[in-house]
Length: 179
Image (cartoon, rainbow, N blue to C red):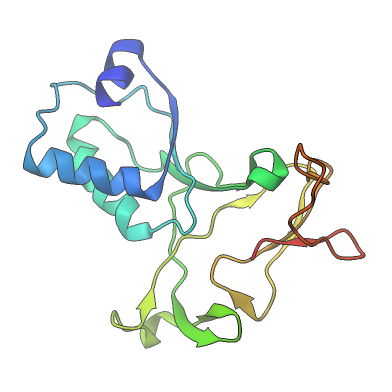
């Protein structure tokens, strides 16, 4: 990827959170990165569920000496049921973490927001919000929510898969809850 950015003056890229971690590990242990500038990069988007602020910070630290500038790493919430992404962080806005305490509850893991001064590493993690709704989408975060859950209403939300089956519930008022 670094070579492609260098040789083709690439500007945009979407990666999984795993790819951010993998590239940091490869650079630190065995990969020789060419002496190149990443100054052409406008946006590298972490489109995972859950996006990790730590992964993006480590990536920025690892590749900062190649011209990767502050604010080019963003987030989005990619969702197959909605063609592509339903949220995107604004270009140039650095990713921020949202401290949550993950608690077990009915049906899985639930996220409870905690104040920054109350967070401890053992039980809480800091996922990044995945930006703002893209144009024409309505979004809400339920007060009591599962980790990563949002509600979506959008003209691009698919009714069914290609086989005609719907495998996700849509409420009477057209909201789809992601988890």
